Length: 431
Image (tube, rainbow, N blue to C red):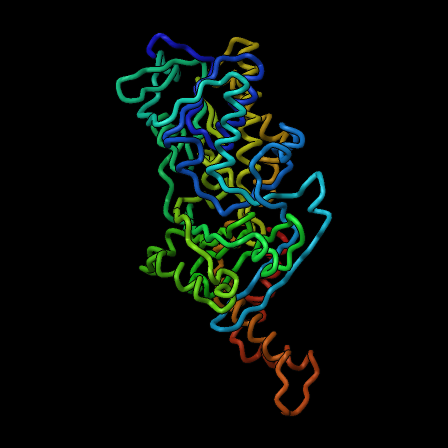
């Protein structure tokens, strides 16, 4: 392959890489899309939900052909503490109609479809290839080395995930710290479609997305998630890797405890575990974004840290797809000017700024600082669940009006007014 030269070599056939490959190939550029796994999606793990807006702009009505699972029509946030739980639910049937708001997905199927779209457009897909190093010529990246093979291109796009070896070896990214990433673990639990609809109160093809906070992570920084697919449930936990290490807790034990919780057990009863996966997830937002471009190279998707976790909303795939679109736009501009230097590729940042990617990450720059607050995973779930339990308890004792119950409960909770006021202000302002 040493005689081949491409306009772009894209490393990583996830949403960012395949989107860039698809858009560039559509323009007639010579594109090589490299995937380390046996097939696109084979090594990918995520919670299970994609917000539709980014891909719909690129492939209008993509859901008519893409292997999506269910459009999400019901959002649930659940606070857990011991045997108590309290949930907040939002249902919007409008989300079940085009243009859809979000979908649950299985990445193995979805990534394969998106990479196939790139292939159909003219990109070359090569799987089972581990990229070892970028190739340089006069200080500029001019290709990649994989084993004994050397492949050359005008530009290399690193879309190889949160632990981007390619970006690190090119000097664009430093090794992340444990506090900047989370460990995600997920099980796919198979259930009949009609049983899923019955258990979650769903009609037709609609789906549910549920997030959990509190005892599901033994009060350490993190949370749980559940997404309904057509004939399965995606169930898992996301835990800050630094906090997980300090607690010396095994993820597998947390998963089993989570499944046994009375809030979860009835929802998965009788189901069969069909798949288990684990993965690192970027969590620090702009705090871990690497240098996004250099002479002959761009960084996109998870490799650029483009993930946003607000606690009640977790986004990643729409950022990945939009960054792949911006990367393709930067390559097109560089090709037209004949300048693949750092200056020529600097339009990438401009395109990211014009899209929602850098705008949203900047708007929520301090969200990681807020979500690191330990009270969110212990004191507040305990307060909410115990207060709700007290409000709904009738035991013949002296009657107390709601305000009195809330105030008395607050006094006994150990939470300080300063803490609550400060946390409330930060939450409203930063989220």
